[in-house]
Image (cartoon, rainbow, N blue to C red; front, side, top):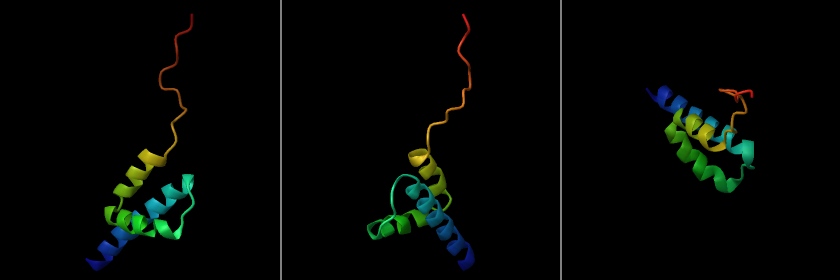
Length: 66
C-alpha cells in the first residue's frame, strides 16, 4: 500500500516537472507546487497537457476546394 502511494506521488511529481519545464524554468520556489501536484498523481499529466500542451496543428476536416 505504501509503495502504491509513493508511486502515485512520484508519477504526479514527474508530470508536473515534465509539463512545467516545457514552458518555464523549475526554481526552488516551484517546489511547493510540485509537491502539491504530486498528490494529484496521474491527473497532473492530464492537467499539465491541457495547460502547457501546444495546440495540435493536425487538420481534422480540410477546407472545401472551390
